[in-house]
Amino acid sequence: FGLFWGPLCCSDSPALLAVQHKKHVTVWQLQLSALEQNKLLCTQTCEMSEPFPLLSQGCVWHPKLDMLAVLTKRDTSVLFSVRVDNRRIKADIKGSGLIHCACWTKDGTRLVVGIGSALHSFIWNDIQKSLVACTFCPIFDVGGYICAIEATGEAQVAVATELPLDKLCGLNSGIAFDLPAETETLHGQGSHLVMADDNGIPDSRRRSFESERSFIPSSGPLDLTHLLAKHRRSDPSPLIHLRRRDTVTGSGQDSSHLVLVTY
Image (tube, rainbow, N blue to C red):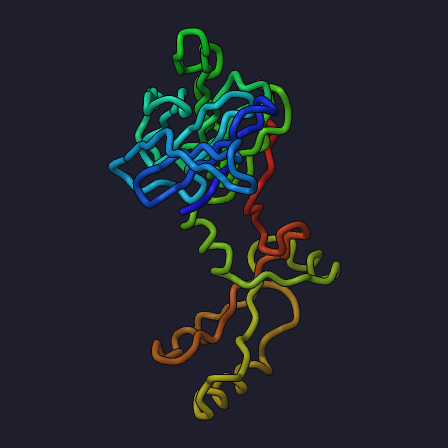
């Protein structure tokens, strides 16, 4: 559900307002009455229904024309005569990914649709009222799951990406720590392991772990298999896997990027 104001193409033209519902869109024309003061006239000029729910930002107005792109997770359609009727044209999308977002470039000639990790580019021909795939770059993979697209130039878009959900969940599978320089020198190879916090470990188990701690050297390779052999599965793990903290994301992996694409 949402409201989306159309572009101001002409100063004397009535304003256009797209009203997004769950599975359909209505377009309204609004203007002040010439006969009665302070009376607003509202007229529905266009309506379109879809088999799938619309995306949260499922209405994208053309920057210069009275045209509206309507997005669902499967389809992208363009209503090109919203002041008159319900005529529309559907983008011929190749592939089976889910649509997440879309935008028009500022010059209005190109509709860019984000599907999975790829940008699908379509050229609008206003004379023929056609929407065809770009000939030189119909599909461009940006290397990450596309979250949002915004026009930044006449033929340029900014794309925000993130890792897929399964990889995002994996970012917290271990705990990242800042390691002193001398520690990095001693343990430059392989992973780092430390004893878990005492909180949550039963007293009987804590005493057995404490008896082992005094024999753990401060540097060099460690044989910790004896700890795991005595560990009950019902108890918290005695080991924590440490990774170097990434100075940018704090997690050891880049989780998102901002990409500028110029056509």
